[in-house]
Image (cartoon, rainbow over all chains, first blue to last red):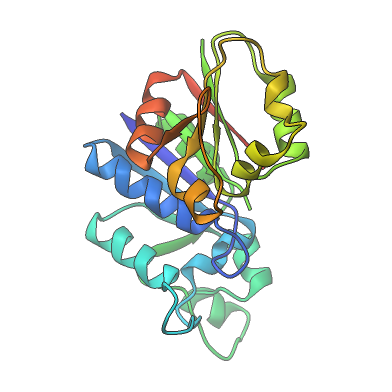
Length: 130
Length: 93
């Protein structure tokens, strides 16, 4: 079965990215397919490369990236939500003349339409709210 | 067409969910929604008879919430199975 997951909460102030990762691992373990991951609202902070959680806490951005890359998943970060929160890739950094870029490899900035597209492609869309 | 309703916080999210539950649906409490089990006037009591209420095991244990019948503790594997067995999934948060 095809799953799409939407994550609305940030690692630092919501359990959503943690729950979504548990769920995504179980989806893959059961042989189902994840056709789209969509990080929206504060959820875009899951894709930043420069957050450094304390060493005795789990590093969710790191764990998510490893999961995305090891399963070669289609991971989309909402571009409007990301820009306003300072999560940018090289292209956006150049476009707005910003001092750097911090989107982790494996993720792509794109529009909200990709959430709708994911919902249409998948048999089930599971939302992890903030 | 059965729906799985997931809820991730107690209070209004549960209340709104309960209003939307139809016959044949099921409910899964995750994250802070497991606290609903500690409330003497729990809103889940208003669910129709026979509506299964599942509780995410690790979230309940992390919060010291005991899960007993008629509630059923589930893990993430079961969460996935519940999604597969339901026609759609609605998230309340």
